[in-house]
Length: 105
Image (cartoon, rainbow, N blue to C red):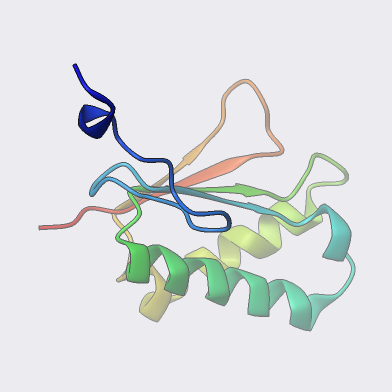
């Protein structure tokens, strides 16, 4: 096999995605007490998932008192947001983490 047969690495700063394998992550630890920034970050990750046709978004509100996780779940349960994704799973081993799954046709 010659050098031309090997896949080239992505240029610096560019990610290559395979359709159906895109997974995104949002860690809310840094903005846990900034309500408007939390909403903005949640809207942003949902829009990015739609743009990139992600299959999964991992949201990390952290363990804490559970109030941030409740806020995230309330956000995800809004009618207009709920229409955008397929389902939500709460991590059974880590209650400070949620998974939002998308289905694309």
